[in-house]
Length: 200
Image 1 (cartoon, rainbow, N blue to C red):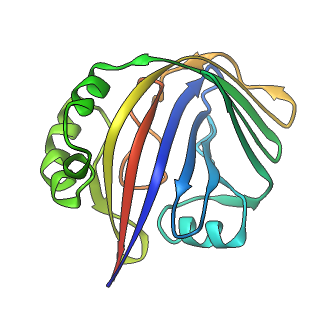
Image 2 (image 1 turned 120 degrees about the vertical axis):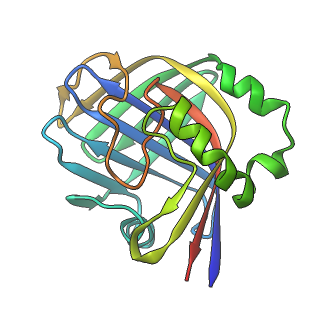
């Protein structure tokens, strides 16, 4: 059994076209620093945009997609503005104030909120309070995954385009995305997280 730990943040938001977008920006991981993007279009197609074969192989062994592409993924943050270019997808969003959940997480020890045992006991609470959200579950290939949130901020504005077509303004992540056993929160936001994947 091996354990793989990813530190970074997950940003999720919806658009008026019905597209939902999840950006994982990982500053420390077994695969180095990288950004990947998961997209679910209005018709239900699930697309992974990955920066390398290594990232693609790990992510597709953990999550489910209808299609995946290896593309250059460029993540930039200047102040509260974030932009991501990933192949034919381009997006920008603005990070706003801390959420109530973020305030609660800020007063808890980091080692506690990111520990798999804490993710296990917090999962039933997350299911009730945050529709579609799970903090633990069984991923692809018999893998077990734990999401330890350590902070959260709102996304207050966003724009995105696919193949040059505008995807519309910012909306909630509804319905929940279907890449794995859980979704990002419905309210657009950026969650600082430690993800632990246990491979048996």
